[in-house]
Image 1 (cartoon, rainbow, N blue to C red):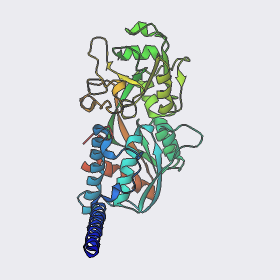
Image 2: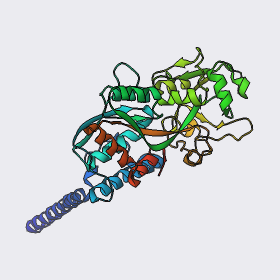
Image 3: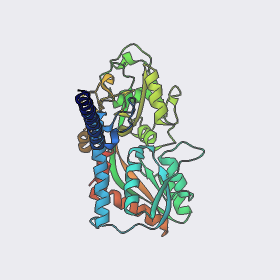
Length: 368
């Protein structure tokens, strides 16, 4: 009898041990099969890429694919351009180029690591087309990016210094007008815009809006190609009214409009149309013509942003239906130096099929 109890006790212990070892072995197998990325992940980890808005992920994917296509084409020799010179080349100028600048510089550097582009901002003045061309004239830049053509006096200054300037068009841009999201306004004509910025129209009720004072904002006209374009093509070279509040850059302009119900500001469409803090409005050449928005209708409400953002009305920019469009230029110093070679190579790369694809993905219109 004692022997039978001992045998039964031993059998029970053996079964318990088997169950324990089986569970332990199964747990080890499950751990080994689990994805490495899940190991040690805290419960408060940041959202993964897949949890971000589909629209934003799709846009980034398209841009990345465009950049990869350019790099691949350059590596395979499918882009018919001469190799750029070796060295570090400073460039800068128009703030309008900001959405395009990093994408192209990164793609070009990946294809030619020895062709190094370094963006240089002015020290004492706001960045812009004018300051970029000035820096080019005095030798601070190898080439400049501009959202306006070269002025006669800039051609003359280059001639005085013993060289020529050349402007190479590479893209088309649209200027967007933005207001406070809570302002109910159907749109503005070019004449109404002129009236606002020359001080003749001071209340939104004068242009089919609410009874609220208009607070116009602008960058200094002499600082960049965008305000120079606006003064020439909208104001007819009339001066900004003293009541126009000047801001040094578009970020400050957008913040000011967002903080003031009567605020209004203008800038390059890729910079401002997709923003959540302000609202782009349609523009008409005259009261007899239809309003054309700088965005693809319907307008995305601020409540839906940033999960959704306004997409640019590229087709209206391309066919000229939108009233405020202009060309973007690479400005090259024609002096036979490596800097000239760098600027010309940069422009040629932008004008390749792959470079123009990056232009489109940055929100501009390709010109070829």
